[in-house]
Image 1 (spheres, rainbow, N blue to C red):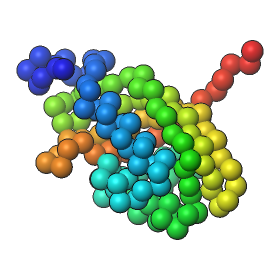
Image 2: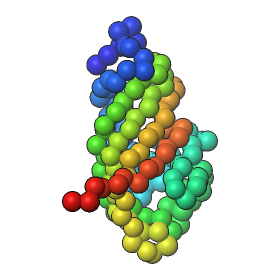
Image 3: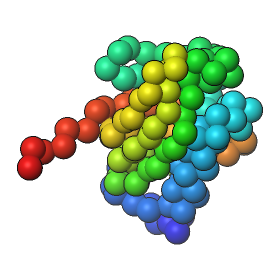
Amino acid sequence: MSTASDQTYGAMTTDPALDTFVHRWAEAIAENDVERMERFVTDDWMLVDVGGQVDAVTFHRLVREGTLRHDSMTHEVVSLRRLSPDVAIITTHCTNTGAFQEHPLAADEWTTDVVVRSADGWRCVLTQLTPRRVPAG
């Protein structure tokens, strides 16, 4: 694992703590465990996708109410860039299934998370979702 003294900021890197962060957060989401999910985001976290943006309070309320449910979620980390000792950008290939307002959903997308490290550990401040285009074959 790299340390702050040997890290080249902005360059691709690996970091087991950040890799673990992504997978533990996905587990909390797939289990619809709002209390655990809240530990992975800042109070002002935003999720942005093709439909617009949603804040942490709204996202977690939708899950708590059962309006939004995830049944599965997997991430493959494809890019990790440390911008400073306490800021990183993680890009993953994510697939997930669940339901929104009782209508089944399945997503195959790129996720980009901006994460910051605080006294409480790593937390996400922004998630950008981009639908993945699968080449016709």
